[in-house]
Amino acid sequence: MAFLREQPWHDRRAFHWHHRWYQDLLVLHRLTLEWLRELKLERPSHFLGASVRPEIKQSIESLERVTDRALESELSDNGLSSLLDDTAPEDFLGRLENSVLTLQAWTLQTLLDRSPEALEALEQVSWRHGRALAERRLESPLEQELDLRVILTFFADNPILGTPEREGLLIRRSTRTHVDVELKCCPHQSANPAALQVSDALCDVHQYWLKGFLYGLSPTVACQYERRSERTSTRCRLSLGITHDLASAPRA
Image 1 (cartoon, rainbow, N blue to C red):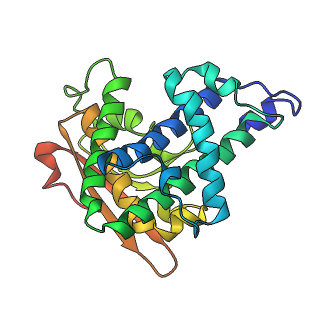
Image 2 (image 1 turned 90 degrees about the vertical axis):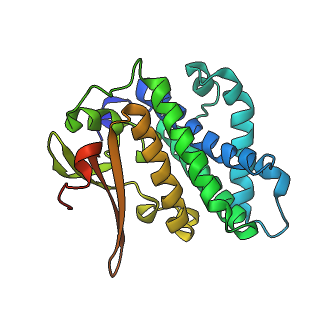
Image 3 (image 1 turned 60 degrees about the vertical axis):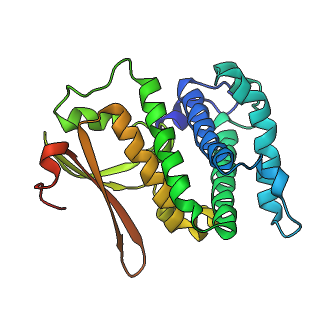
């Protein structure tokens, strides 16, 4: 990637995209905490059991140290700078990303093991969380924007779709009134073992988050989700359309 060539090995400064990546990871972790609040539970460490794997326990402890300092600072840029160690910022953020996803997957699995019917509540929490972030990022909704290609540029920039330097969408079709995309950062495509173990359920709540985010961008856009299981992989797609056009739009 270009940023690795442009930054000398000995330079440990965090640049704008590092701070944005950090903020996105905190948004994802806040989503996990919102699940716990919805179900009237405390932070993850409060329901650790003796059977919890060491990597899960380490993820929980490291994230609680980060969030205790960072979430109270309104996601300020200074938060990242104070956490960096003697490794490159992208190395630190890569480890943090792994911890966020590991904990989120483990929390989801734990909650569903306790109460399988909780999935619907978690989907609704995720939808509201996605919508709230979109509304915070926009000065005003894009409800007057009828070109989905414009809306897609805003939609593609969100924490669920990976780091700011990563292309999280594969565009299958893009016109003014209809867009088909494949999710390249779907939990089914993850390299994280914990996410893969609960990929179907995690993908479900993530797609509700994406639908909420899209609604926050423009309530005039509807979204359909499709999961395709193949022999060796699972592919997830979204079809976007202006509300009155989506029902008649051709499928990918």
